[in-house]
Length: 634
Ligand SMILES: Nc1ncnc2c1ncn2[C@@H]1O[C@H](COP(=O)(O)OP(=O)(O)OP(=O)(O)O)[C@@H](O)[C@H]1O
Ligand SMILES: [Mg+2]
Ligand SMILES: [Zn+2]
Ligand SMILES: [Zn+2]
Image (cartoon, rainbow, N blue to C red; front, side):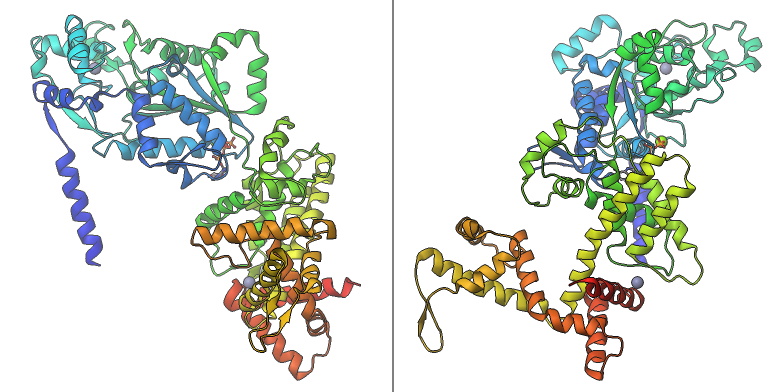
C-alpha cells in the first residue's frame, strides 16, 4: 500500500517541478542551450515515436516499439506513417501535406491516431518533449516568434535555431499595449498537451455539412465583447478557440475527413500548405501542426475520381491501412479487445482465439496465384511458419501478385462481436474453438452486409479452419497421453540424431552397454522421415540439413531440442503417436471404458488442465471431439 502513496507523492513532486513560469528573458538562455525546445510539431512527434526504441526485423525494416503495445501485424503501414513524420521533421515539403489514412472498417485507423495523441501528451511531460509557450496566448504560441525578423538570421547562424512564423494578433497587441514592446517582459510557461484541456491536440468531427460552422475550426467573433472593444478586428473581441487554433504546435485529427464540407477542406489546404489559418478579420495566423485524417475506402475512391478535388489530392500523403494478415498478431488483437470486454468467470478454451484468427486472416487473403500454394499455406507463410514447397523469401513475390490484399474480409470487431454474442448464452461456462466457429458462421446470416458469394467463400474457409483445428485437437490429446511427452520426444530425437550422425560420417554406432558395433538403423530413420514425407531420394539432403541446424545451435551455445526444427518436431510427434496409436484410439473411443481406461482418461484430462490451459469442461469436450475424429479414421 505504501507503494501507491509514494507514487502519488512522486507524481505531485514532478508536477510542481515541471510547471515552470518565467519571462522571455528567462526562457531565451534555456532555448539557446537546448534547441530541442524549439522543435516544430512534426519533429517533436517523430522524436516521441523514436523515444520508445526501434528494432530491426529480419528484413532490416525498422520496427517501432511505440506502436507495439497496441497495434499488431501492420508494421508496413506504420513504417509509412513514421517515414512521413521523419521527412516532415527534417523540414521537407512532405510536412506540408495532410497525412490521410484509408482502409476498411476497424483496421486500426482510429487506434493509431489515439496512440499518437496519447503518446504526444505524455511526451510533453518529459524533458525531451518539453514545450514552452507564451503564457497569455490563446494559441500557446512559440515564444521565439517574439524575436524580430532582422535578428533571426543571427540566431540561425550562431545557435542553429530556426525560427518561422509571426506573433498571433493577440500576442502582437499584448506586446504593444501590455509590455510596451519589451519582448523580455512577455510571460512564458511550460505547457502540457492535453486533448481534454484543448491544448496542443485537436479533433474535428464533421457533422451536417450545411449547418456546421467554420468557427469550430478557426474560432469566432465574441459577440459579447465586440461592443467593449469597438471593432470586430480587435483580437480581444475574437475567440481563438477553433480546433486548429488549439492544436497549434501539436496535432489535429480530422475524423471522416471526406465527409466534411469543401469549405473546411480548403482551410486545411491553406494550413498545411502555408502554415496559416485564415481567421475572421485578421490577416493569416501562423500555425504549426501535424494534420492526420482518416476515411473509409468508398469515400476515398469517390474523392480520387472527383476532378474538383485534385488540388487537395496533391496536398495529401495517402497511407493505406489494411487489416493485419498475421494470424498470431490477430490473436493478440482479440486478447487486447477481450481484456477490455472482461469475460468474467467464462473460460476461453485453448485455440478458441486461434481458430477465429485463422478464419479472419483467411477471409482477408486473396486467392494465391502460384501453383501449389493454397490460402491456408499462404496464411501460415505470412505468419512466419514453414510450409511445404515455399519459403519466407517467396512472400515478396506472393505479395506482388496481389491486388488489394487486406482491404476486404472480416474485421476484428466482427469476430469480437460474435465471440461476445456466444458469451451471453445461458449455462455456458466455457467457450471452445467449435463454439467460436459456430458463432462466426451464424454471424454471416444475421449480418446482411455480406453478399451471397462472400458467404459461400466464408463457409469454405470455415471448413478449412476446421480441418486445421482437427490436427491441433488431435495433437493436444495425443500429447496428453504421455506421462512426459517432452522427455519421450527428446529421447527419440537423440536416438534419431545418433543414427543420422553415424550415417553421415559412414561410421558404426557403439552400444554403450555391450560395446557391440551396429550399423545405423535405416528403418528407424526412414520411419521418422516418412512421417513428414521425406522421399527416399531426399533423405540425404534432409539429414544434412538437420545436422547443419544442430551444428548451428551448438555454435550459438543453444540447445537443439525437438522443437528447434519445425519439420523434425512434426515427424517426432507423429512417430510417437503412431507407436501408441491403438491404445489412444481404444481409450478415447470406447463407450464403456474399463477401470484402467477410465483412469487413463482422467489422467489425460488432468494433464490437459495442468499443462495446456484447459478446464475440465473443455478438456472433456476435446476428448469427445477427438474420439469422433478417430472413429472416422480408417
Ligand atoms: N492491427 C491491429 N492491431 C491492434 N488492434 C487493432 C488492429 N486493427 C484493429 N484493431 C482494434 O480494432 C478496433 C477497431 O479499430 P479502429 O476503431 O481503430 O478502426 P478504424 O480503422 O478507425 O475503423 P472505422 O473505419 O470503422 O472507424 C480497435 O479497438 C483497435 O484497437
Ligand atoms: Mg475509426
Ligand atoms: Zn499568440
Ligand atoms: Zn474450458
